[in-house]
Amino acid sequence: MKKVFSFAVALIISLAVFSQQSESVDTTVISKIREEAYQHSKVMNHAFYITDYSGPRLTWSAGYDRAAEWTLNEFKKWGLQNVHKEEWTPLGKSWDIVKSYVAIKSPYYQSIAATPKAWSGSTNGLVVADVMLASATDSADFVKKYKGKLKGKILIFESKLPPPSFSFKPDAKRFTEDSLSKLAVSTDPGDQLLFDTDTAAMNKKFAGLMQMFNTYFMSDKLWTFCNKEGAVAILSLGGGKDGTYATDGSYNFMPKPNSLNIANVGIRTEDFLRITRLLNHNVPVKMELDIKTSIKPQPAKGYNLVAEIPGTDPMLKNELVLVGGHFDSWHGATGATDNGAGSIVMMEVMRILKKLNLDMKRTIRIVLWGGEEQGLLGSLAYINKNVADYSTMKPLRDYDLISAYYNLDNGSGRIRGIHLQNNAALRPVFEQWLAPFKDLDAGTVSIKNSGYTDNESFDLVGIPAFQFIQDELNYDTRTHHTNADTYDELSEDDLKQASTIIASIVYNTANRKEKLLRKPKPNPYGNFNFYLLQ
Ligand SMILES: [Zn+2]
Image (cartoon, rainbow, N blue to C red; front, side, top):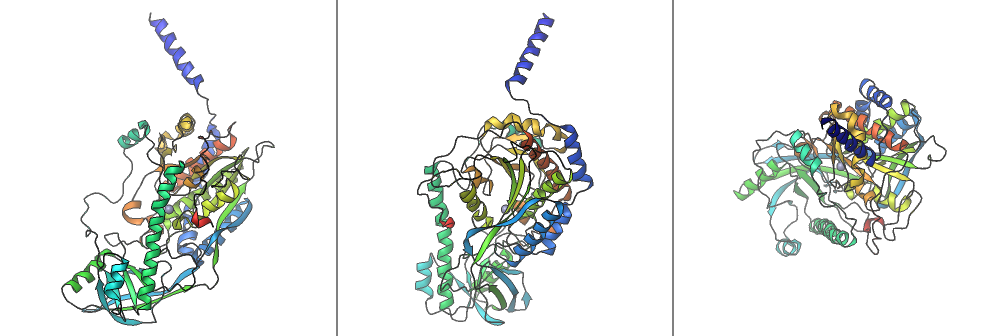
């Protein structure tokens, strides 16, 4: 009886193994990748040059150009092929901060941390002015209440948000084994995030997105009104707490005739509330500002960075494995974790694969995107031009050639596994590919959708496009879009670990017999208006 039972168990096990394709995993290659990634790592060198050396990488800015130039040069030095910039539209404003000084002048002197919002205008040199507390239900109400009353004033808008409170949780965290196990067994992919492959749902989401942008555009109208009325500057609530504040933009990035940009400065929540409290106690506040920003007269083209390692198989070398992440950042720090980290890791993946001179059948292409922070501009434009037309779903040059796109954009934390983007058929593939990395804590495969970034642009046309499960560290609590997003927030060991795992997965994808199985092709988006692509 015992023997029969063992035989039956053995039969079931072997049937189970045969029922799914067994993926070949070359452990010698993986050892070489690990050795190169850990013993000869260049991640902190890439990090230095695209953060400290280049400065912030706001789309269309001088810092983006500096970092791009260094990166393309490195690609060439490593021997990558087809290294180039790929331009996209819409045109934007090439904007930079030339000078930024903000201080409270009275009731006492104190300089404060502040960053002009992206695409903010300038003050008329060094100005001292009274701060005025404004409160309105909407822009129409604001215009009615304040017409004729803004001349010479610095404006601060009463905040409706609750003040920051203490947190008793640590700023940085990693996944626990328990939370990873829950992710692994969950059968709910969750919603698609920014966009949606279902046309009706997509249009609904797009309406929401347009509303958000309209709000910003309305703000621009409001700022133009303030400027015409002779106000000196706007003080904006930066959000964040414990010293950090968001340094994003006014979204007034598209060249528009006659748009008048007032100086618009983001400050820490604590200073914003202090000034508000003083004014509410009838203590007059004077401030001193000197804000100078520059906008190049010509509208600027954005661009992505592209480079390749050509495939070696005569039949398969036209096929592609894509890796990438967005290269642009906000401008209040140096965008080290958003998305320096993703760019650094994907650069390192290319360096490792090229350095080891591995035999890879398919071509590996890296694309580092611009314009992600302004609405995935670089990746949407790339796909609409090279992969598939969003409105008709007509396949373009690369549509049939891409096996997969791997994206990294959730900070500097190590990889704990991969999100399947609701493509359940690929679970056994990634489980086998991640099996050698149990000791690096990276074995989890989750069905979830991950997005709000460039993998969604590919997912929309049905290309397998993934983000990894990453330890969050202090991304959401401290660095994401803030003045604290600097080199020192990068975790070197985590970046090495991520480079090891992605390089191995890319190698496997390049040499797999078949391309990765796709989800059903989405319907054309028809008249869906990707307004930014026009
Ligand atoms: Zn990002």
